[in-house]
Every structure is written in C-alpha cells, then in structure tokens.
Amino acid sequence: MIIKNFEKLAKTEDRKLALRMIDVGLDAVDTKKIIRSTVHIKGDELSIGDAVIDLRDIDNLFVVGVGKASLSAAEELESILGKRISNGVVIDVREGNLKRISAFSGQHPFPSEVNMKATKEIIKLLSGTTKKDFVIFIISGGGSTLLCQPKNMTCSDESEFIKLMFDEGVDIEKMNTVRKHLSFARGGYLAKYAYPARAISLIFSDVPGDDLQFIASGPTVKDTTTTKDALRILQTCKNGNQFGVDEDSLIETPKDDKYFKNIRNIIVVSNKIALTAMAKEASSEGFLPEICTTTLSGEARDVGRDIVHELRKAKNRTVFLYGGETTVTVRNPGKGGRCQELILSALRFINKGETVVAVGSDGRDNTDFAGALCDTITKDTADKKNLNIEEYLNKNMAYSFFEKTGDYILTGNTGRNVSDIIIAIKNK
Image (cartoon, rainbow, N blue to C red; front, side):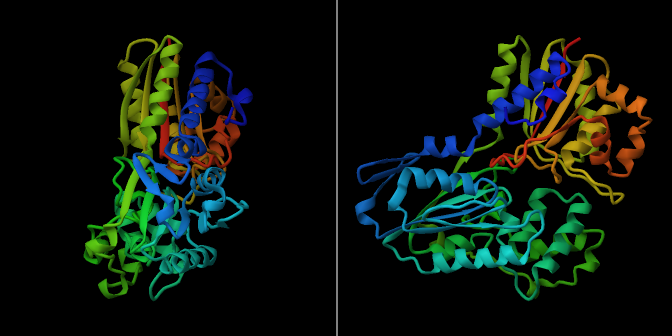
C-alpha cells in the first residue's frame, strides 16, 4: 500500500475503497513497470515501443532524463540495458545513485543553482553527440523547473516570476509558455543539442490533454509559441509590471525543423491509465464508475464545490473519477496545495454517504501531504475542534486544517507524475 497512513484514514468502507483505488491507480502508472513494458532488448536489437534500433549501428547509447519520474525510469533502463549505456544524466527531485548515469537531485517547485548546474551537465553531454549516437530521453512532470538555464537573469529572478504566476492561478499551459522562453533547455532545446544523433523521448504526461509542447515545457518537442506569446502572458498578469522583462530579454526557442527530424516523442503514460485501473477496481466492488474527465481544470475551490453538486445528482453506489490539474488563486499567505484546497472546498457541501478524495500522483501536493479526503466524519471533527471551514479556505490554509482533522494523505515521493487524481463516491 503506497498510502502510509491508510490504517488511520480507513474509518469507513467508502474511505477504504477510495484509498484502495488510489493505490491501484498509482500502481498502474508505476514508472518502472511502464519502462519494462516499453523497452526491450534481444541480442543487438533494442525495441522501444514499436521502434526497433540495431545497436550495431550505434557508437554510443546515452540516457538523459528530467522530472519526477526520471530517476526510477533511469534505474529500470540500467537494469534492462546494463553496460550498453555509454553515459547519461538525469535530474530528479529525489536523490539516488546510478551505475552508468549521473543522477542529480534538484529543487522544485522553484529553480535553484543546483538545477542550473545539473542542466549544464545535460547540455554538455548532448552537445558532444554525433549522428552515430542514440539518445533515450525521459521527460516527466517537474522538468520545467529542473531544466533551468536562464538568459540575463538568475534562477532567483525566474523563481519570482513563477511564484507570482502561481499565486495568480495561471494555468499550466500559460505557465509553461513563459517557462519555455526563460531557459536554454526547454522548448525544444534538448532536441537541438542532441542533433544530429537519433533519439526517442519517453514522455510521462502530467499535463491535461497530453500536449507534448507543455509537458515539462517540451524540451524535445518543436515549440509553436514565441517570445511575443510569453511577453503577452506576463503583461496580462496582475503583477506583470514587477517582472521587468521585455521581448529582448526572453529566449526564442528553436524553430528549424532539422533539429526535430531525428527524434521521436512518445507518450508512454498519462492519467487515463490510472483512472481506467481505478474504474475497474470500483466496478469489482459493485459500484458504477464513470471517468468524468482526464483534463480537469479550473479554480480548485470552484471545482470542489461542483464535484459535490454533481455527485448529489448521481445514483446510489456511483463513483466519479477525474484527472487533471486545477489552480489556486492565493489570497492569503497560507499553506496547502490544489488537492487540499479542492477537498476543503468540497467539505462545505458534503452530506452523509458522500466521500471525496484528491491526491497529487507525485505524492506532493505543494507540501509533504499528497492530498486529502473529506466526508461527514471530517465535518464532525471540524465542528468538535471549532474549525471554521470558510475561514481556512479563504486564508488558503488547507494544510493546517487537514493537519488538525487528520484527514490528509501521506505517500512520500512516488516517482510518478500523471497530474492529480480525484475520486467522488456516493453510497447512501
């Protein structure tokens, strides 16, 4: 069981079902399992998906990874490929030791000097490749922050930009449009450095809709946005005048098709796989599951309210499943994450026989909590402790609220990242 505080939370059969469903969903997107099902070697033939590479034609095989799934993926690639790997570099948020690949632990959600140093190592490795080399890229959520290589600014400057956008609830596509034009390692730059080597990019999607350009800010994908697009987004932010940037201070991404002709980008996992496994688990318990969306978005507090309202209309023994990524407009300097805020908002409307759970698949909902759950038990606990739900919500203090009720979910870093997962159960 990946949920560390399962026993403490499992007070009802509906809670147990929801927590088991999360466990099943996360197991279905286990990074090492995904790599094992995607990458195979037989003799001198390397198969990646439906692509077959004759290793006799390759001088060097490199592995380059970024994001919260990269360390686990690299570990499994070393297990499969062994000494056939010539060299490699991965940047994850976790620490780890690999045999043939250099592993760096970077900072997230805001970039640091460590991220810049690790990114330089990737650029150095890729810049030395030739047409006789082959690169396996691992791209996963968190890569945007980890691939920090700014122009005429520091990583601290970038952190300020990103924090202001986070606080305003800027959605992931707009956020990553700006990020792509703040780094010489995003928006197709890794593909440019790897050219003319051949490459396959294994992409673990954490972006609703699975748009390759925005997953980890698309480091191996040709970017269709421009510095003008990034500047326009910055200017429309409420605090845009604090950024102090113009188009000349932004970075244009590579536009020449030649840099992308030797690379193939493959999405190997997304939240749909997790949600499908969860629906099967619910069905096996006699519930009627429905995958409502894999592209959930919107203000977390609004989404939490809307989910309960939809659940209220549902038939008994219904399970609604959602995947995606909401946003939080920070009104006060509280502590929490979008999953916790969504659940705190939902709690305002919860009735008997209704349970709602939300978790970040990476195990960190902007805090050490992966997420939270709520039902009438949560509401009773809040009443007994004199916790005002509206007050905590308006102060963006979901973390403190669930710390006091005990209805937070702990997993630790999962080594996975397929956006957020939400479950709503009706069982009266």
